[in-house]
Length: 378
Figure 1 (tube, rainbow, N blue to C red):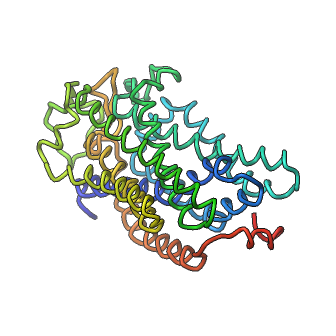
Figure 2 (cartoon, rainbow, N blue to C red; figure 1 turned 90 degrees about the vertical axis):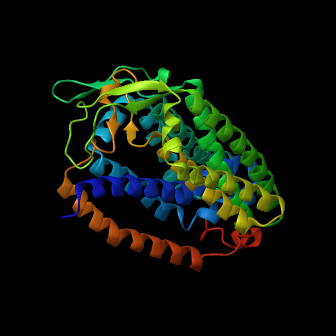
């Protein structure tokens, strides 16, 4: 059986990888859906936009489901506590996501402009709301969530739904939404032509600049806000209780990892490099490179957030000593060990069939194609 400390670190990395996979693969689907009512000026153009993601959106859901399942299995206390605190926000995400499969499947069933317009806006909600709420959730994780554990280790959330929407959390929501819109617009540049591609390029430039601004502003705020610092001795390899440590809140504490390990700045540099590459390539009409750039931005933004708060996973603002960390929120050594080997087998399989599917169905979707396939395409 693998070392427990190694497994705890590996599962932090694997959860980050799954979240990055979700942001890159399912993220451009969501971005396309959120842009649908604005970039498509008539029914045929909207059908072109839908069919750029039509062959792949269901397969890309694997990343979302797997990321959620991995958090449940690897970090059960985080899963339970987060659902207590973010219950209504996560239910809003769930209900918004309902619009995606129903919208894709039902939209073209009736040749009525009002019917199709309703589902177009449904797909907008299904893409935009989750992107916004995920960012708001990350913002709350960084500032801390008001929860504590009872003697029975039952998590108790002491905040409210509206308290989740602080200025910093909303800024993170805007960053998340603009990131996926930027990524989705770059994908549309790559898969469409003529007027649709031109509008997608304009959208990519707008949302890329918004992302650059809010990501920079968020970084300044994080550097100056109250962070969390473990002051007691923690033995990473031991199975410890999440309430058995001492944590203090300290201004600028989220920068400690950067001071101690300067190499972490490379993750922030990756985020900026991806954003700037995506913007420059979109400006120069190089959609393939622009899509790679926004994909790198997805990875850099997620890794920057994770590295900033490491080893914390879910800090507690009301009882800092009950904060959940990589060392004390995990499943048993046996569970992590079994899951590790399953991930070693399944992750390459998912990557392989995803790569194959995108290769087989590559190329641009045109107006002529959708007009000639009234029944065979969305």
